[in-house]
Image 1 (cartoon, rainbow, N blue to C red):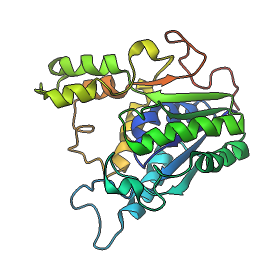
Image 2: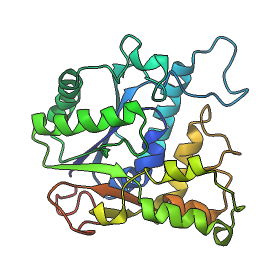
Image 3: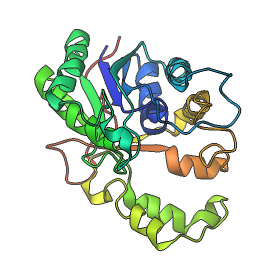
Image 4: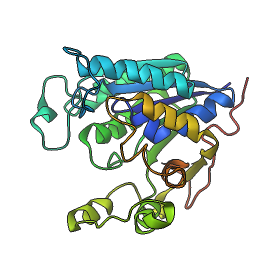
Amino acid sequence: MATLVTFHAHPDDESIACGGVMRKAHEDGHRVVLVVATRGEEGEVVEGVLADGEPLWQRRVAETHAAAEVLGADRVEFLGYRDSGMMGEPTNTAPDSFWTAPVEEAAQRLAAILTEENADVLTCYDDNGGYGHPDHIQVHRVGMRAGELAGTPRVFQQTMNRDMFVAGVAAAAELGMEPTELTEEEVARMSTMGKPAAELTASVDVTKYLDAKRDAMAAHASQISESSRFLSIPPEAFAYLFGTEWFIRAGQGPGITETDLLAGIGTR
């Protein structure tokens, strides 16, 4: 049995980014550990979800545990930092925000879990955090350093296939989606999301686990409603967007050289 530790910024990130590899690892007989840096205090709340007086962080923690159960996680841990909000917001520098946490301190917290679990594989994010969110960028910095401190054999940076994403937007009608006119700002933002296909070294086909991935995303009801752009799209479009999970591992490539993050490590 191998151990996969997957590290994320906020509740729901795990389901969107790595839900497939988590469920695959579970079904392949491996141990799955989910670590989340923050409790997602700054998330935008779906209207009508929270009870009167219910704090968002409390709901998001419960949603994380529900999603983790769907994905087969054996353990869920929060590092204890505060959600920093989007880049440029005053919350970036709030007390205990993840963005302002010393990398070495946060990495030691994560490394302690990696060491305790004798982790074989760690996932974090690419150096831009996928799309430039401060907490996602910090997940990259902290994750990479923690992997060094713990001596984790394989560290994968989860990302998006930028070329595939852009092509999918252009072919939206063929995927059963309404074509959308993009503004110049949206086009510019898309050009910085994820990484070009040429930089990716691992792709995992998770189409077999799409039902679990969708159910895990739906478990985060305070953030992802059934009418959201993620859950309301046709099955073909959902499979296109979420059926492959993409990663970069230093020392691999060029091109895709791995299709299973835990290949060759062993099972029960």
